[in-house]
Image 1 (tube, rainbow over the protein chains, first blue to last red):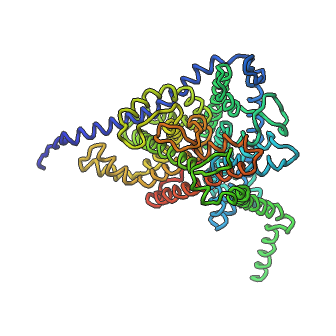
Image 2 (cartoon, each protein chain N blue to C red; image 1 turned 90 degrees about the horizontal axis):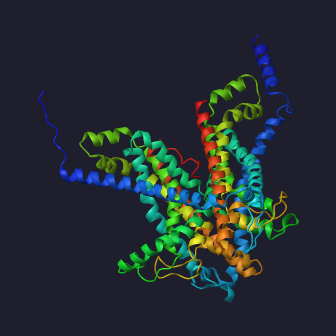
Length: 290
Length: 334
């Protein structure tokens, strides 16, 4: 065998390679910059606002005096997102079960998938507008703005995320499980509810938590549906405050203390969403083992 | 004997299937879930019809053509021409794509092809975290940080490169560029996630073949990775565009909310989504104004529908090309 030497790469090509890799690396670093800056400013501006009374008093709305805290906003966000989850999860999981277990590749199933995809793309503000014209202006249920109407708007946003992720997980449930259940004489409904669903549950929870995290940060649909108020309420039939709406409201105020409250609220909100996201990832990692 | 066996099998079968009453739960589940699924379709159809019906007053008052192609949005004079809004939406989204897509693709390339194994996962998580920050927080940050900090740089840029169209001229604090920049940050995670997913499906053989022929890393990327994942990247970019078009709160806070078409990208404007968020309070008492805002929502809906449809064809094409490529998961970025 004759030995051959590897010709060294032509310097121009080598330079191009170096430059291109450098550019890719630089752009990647640029992608991280906004995250660092946002987190830095959140901590710098937000930590100063946070105290015990920040969480235990309602916003006062007073421009000159004490701006109060964010208690009503936290309660509102938790209540509305909670109700939205109660709306969205059964429907979303139900549709996903139908798609995987019954609809499969039928025409109707394709149509349903298509419409779920359409829902994913609809801007949140348009959902807000929809709830506004169907439930708020018509005075549905005897109220105009109400917490539960905000929940409906959020649920519309969550529905496609829940359905899609649940569908993906249900498809992963091995067919042998279903066959084993049928072989033992279980009827279909029992197989679906007692065998398939529990097997898919951990994965579904991940999708649900991510949907919840997304809904918690939404502002636009709530402005039209739950409005912005100061007082705390646990009654979903009344107007409700929320963290994103409060932040939006306060940014527009040319008053430093209100702005500081907005930063504190933003920090609280991001912390809540991060915890949900981390939880979702942890559960996901667990469920992969099974 | 044969007949007896058949008879027994029939009995056995009936026994297994149970009486009609025993099969009731099965039917209930099946039809209940079917009804639920059909309900989703009905809901979206209803949603579309409601938007059309509620925006009808402005169309009959102004004419559809006039609404879409006239440039005067002056609610106090009952003038509703959506051109400044549509133009603002398109400009900000275009800026978002111009800045966001190259960065997102570069990030995906770095993570899949160049980065040391150890930092791949952390880097992916960092980019995904960008999606966890809510829109209103980006708006808050853009309003108090980006606008003041970038103003001198924007002024310098506008002066130095004033010969480029739509760059020169006066610079206002809130403007199209800032809005586009924030949108770029917001679409980065989804474009990057989809690009990454597509790039990870590039067959190893293609890459190794390129390297074996003596290609440098970059040449390998250019000749093996990019062509293979082009359609998927385009699909991801389109999904990002869909997001950018519909994004509301962050844009509302940094675009200045002026219903006019700015002379350059450093001037204030308005977008379809921002106008809805901003004016709906004052529109509550004025049916025509309200209809005009709902019509803006309708235009927004149709725009996102078109863009997402385009995205789907790209992603489907990419899937057909690669087969192995999975659907973009609805995960965090979804």
